[in-house]
Length: 328
Image (cartoon, rainbow, N blue to C red):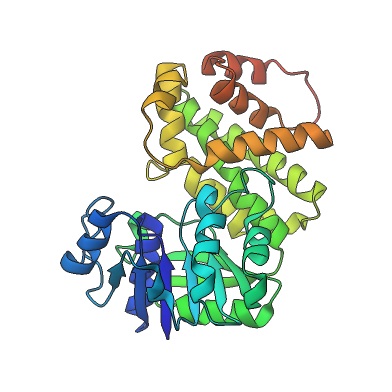
């Protein structure tokens, strides 16, 4: 099967490894010439990994290489998803399966990413599947054990994606709660920033356990308001992704929080950061939506204050602990 991957970043490369190992024809597209040439000529993506990539993986800067693909994987940041979708749409077959792996929301409309893609590919009658869950590209490229979800309202499409990606080290489950799954994997990035902040401030396991538990309650509250199933947040796209992102230095969101906590200020990090930190975008959107709909999101509110209002992380931590006492 011909499968194209849009984006030559770490996660796109990790999933290319899985697909190539499964015997598929994998064609990557990217804008970064150094990444494309490294993948095409050296079978590495040295910007992100020391591990070698499957030598059958191809890469190009010509977006027309997607022609004839049965599956197209969208592995670009949430802020670029819509523009890349519109750019690639003319070259796609009708009924193509679009697999989104980004975690976040549309920066202006605040829509979930599957909704954004459904609109962008409407004239192609595309079948949208989100492939999301607890996963670090650094581990997938090394073929370490990983389990995630193929989430879609289209059962057949989710089954196809499940079968195409699954192998002895990469296990894919199916889930049909798009609302809950997409909200879960987006909001856990906000909690990962908070977790990193605690680490940077010198806090320990007790604080992290409390943060993750109350963070899961916050994510569930937000998701249920918008129509998700409560049980989704106990699965891979809820507690699973929360664990892997809030406890690992592989996580960009955790490490962003760590740098902010260590400085007790977001100023230096925001001035120097060159990486995509999805939790920063998600935090702003969730803060605005929660305020609009009167959803209680105390951790998100404090992360927002640190990122966008100049609040000291140490003060945010104190204020969270000083909230009115109540039942769990």
